[in-house]
Amino acid sequence: MKPHYSDDLDTLLAPALKPATGDRDERLQKLLQRAGASRLRHQVFTTIRRNATPWRDLMKGVRGRDLRSTADGSSVLLMLAPGASLPMHRHRHLEEGIVLSGRMQMGDLDLGPGDYHVSFPGSRHDRITSAEGCVTYLRGTSLGNVFGLAVELLGGLMPGSGAEPLTIREADDDWRQLAEGVVEKRLWQADGSLSRFVRLAAGSHYRPGGYRGECEFMVVAGEAFFGDILLRQEEWHLAPAGTQHDEISSDCGATYFVHERAPADTR
Image (tube, rainbow, N blue to C red; front, side, top):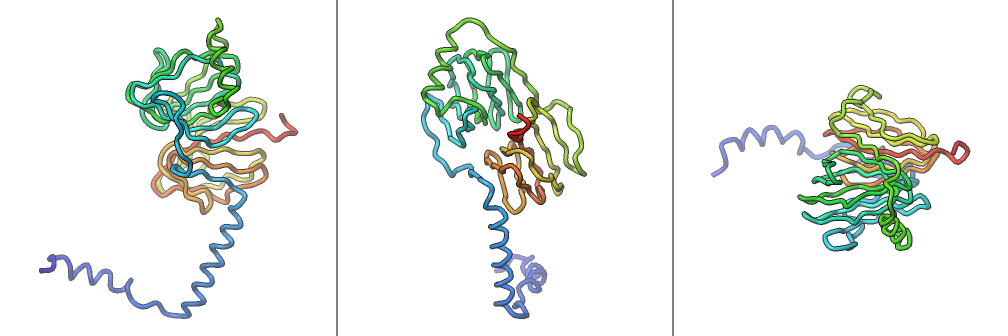
């Protein structure tokens, strides 16, 4: 026996199920042309999907996923199992970290989803732990560089803490409007480079303009379209200097991190 609502549902769906009219081959050709043009426009960008690269074991309870390596440190995703910890270490580079899920503890400091933490070159971190487990995005770490990591671990044994780190909470009310339904929070700026959060309400969109410097993106929450590229939480994206996304939008709402590196002539 059909459910009582079946006839009503059939009535609503029938118009959408009618055979298409017109030249089907012509429409298909236009669709393929549009898809091809989109692919050409977006081939300058690099995207790493959440499950595209494997996790690798770094130490007991700690796994990493490599995103990128540069002379200024690596970009990685770091996963700590509940109860896992990282040993104390001294930073070689300016290191930015964002908790994407779970919670992370640095002494008395407790960081949750969307919290941002920046450590300066020469500064020391005591042991980092996670009671419940977490996934964190790091930019500027020595993870993935055997020599650099050894230097950081040995440096952690030396006295002196170095410059105080900076923490910005996800809940901090320091956003400024970019467009209707779109706000940004500036995090760290030096030598012309800028790190910030951008938050899009559901259904919002804006045009960011051209990128003077290379831009590195990480989706912190939700999902957003960067042009025709859909990015979800924990997905990484790189836009070279001189490129641009015609539009960034979100159907359901999103928060993403972006670091724009200063062009070579301004550094």
